[in-house]
Structures are given as structure tokens and as C-alpha cells.
Amino acid sequence: MRDHIIREDYELWDIVTDGPLASSRKAVEGVGVPKTRADCMAEDLKKWEKIGKAKKWLVSGLGPDEYNKIQSCTTAKEIWDTLEEAHEGTPQVKRSRGTLLYSQHENFTMKEGEIIQEMYTRFITLINELKSLGRIILEKEKVEKILTRVFLVTWESKITDIQELKNIVTLKLDELIGNLTAYELRRQIVKMDAPKKERSLAL
Image (cartoon, rainbow, N blue to C red; front, top):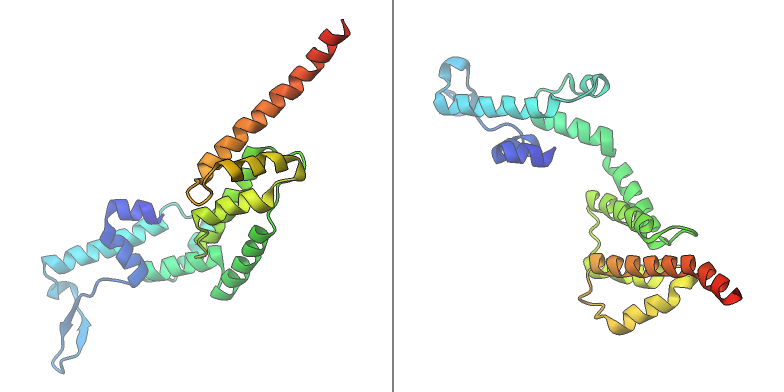
């Protein structure tokens, strides 16, 4: 949603996160009061138009249940805050979820019978969920995690080879996963070829 709104107009995202653009006039006492339609100049009308656009972007595409939650909201910021809390929970819920996800990250391992790409998809999903809650895992930490704590003992020799041959500090996660996937495919080919060799030796 954020990217779509920013592509349309960056100022719309400011309205969503910071509230409406100010459009007020000074009263006799010097206090700012909202302008009426009659007081508005062309610049004020543009601000109102942007405020309306921001609300439209947030509301369009909502289902009936979500629309009911934001019906009483008067500003784009209120709509966004309500939707954010509905989907991500209160700050306390987000903190608890972050703690749970980080614990899952700490204890992440490859499952028995799982292939590299399946493991990698689970890992990246977890990393992205942590990122959405403000917990950023650095590239070198991801690589180190995969190399030191994720794989089953049957992968030990390959992991040791990578650690000895590669500069772990500069190794990219995609490169590591590519290397491991290629090794996994070679193992599968050898496994498939083994019965053929046994049959040929028997002859």
C-alpha cells in the first residue's frame, strides 16, 4: 500500500502518516481556525484534493469487515492507524509477536526431508516478518546463521568446505543458497545413478 501511494504522490503518504495538510486562517484573537469553502484559495483546494485522494487510496479495495472498522474515521491518518492496529495489533501485541518471531529465528533449523529452497523460503519469510516489526537481520548474520546453526549433520562436510573456501564476511546469502542448491542437485543425481552402477557391476 505504501509503495502504491508514494508512486501516485509522495505528499499523499505524508498525509496518511502525519495527518492532513494545514489549511487554516487566523481569527480575530490570532488563533488558527479551519478555513471554510468560501475562505479557500486555489492552494487550499489542492490540499483538500490531496486529503481526499489519500483517503480514497486507503478505502478503495477494503472488504465490508475492514470498511466497518474505519467508517467513523475522518482523516487518512485515522484510517491508516485503525487498519494498522487491526492487522498488526497493538504495540504490546507487536512486541510480543516480535519476541516470538525472534525466538523462532534463533531456533531455526532445516527440517528432515526438506530441500534447500523450501528451507530458504521459510527462512526469508521469517526474516521479512521480523523486518516488518522493525527487527533488521544483517546480511552477514543471515549467512552466519545458515552456515552454523541451520543444517542437519548430513550437510556438515559441505558446510565445512564453504567455510574454508569462502570469505564468510563478504559472502552473500543468495550466493550461499545457490552453492548449496547446486550441491543438493549433484547429490540427487549421484543417488539416482547409484542403482545403475550397481546393476552394471552385477553384470
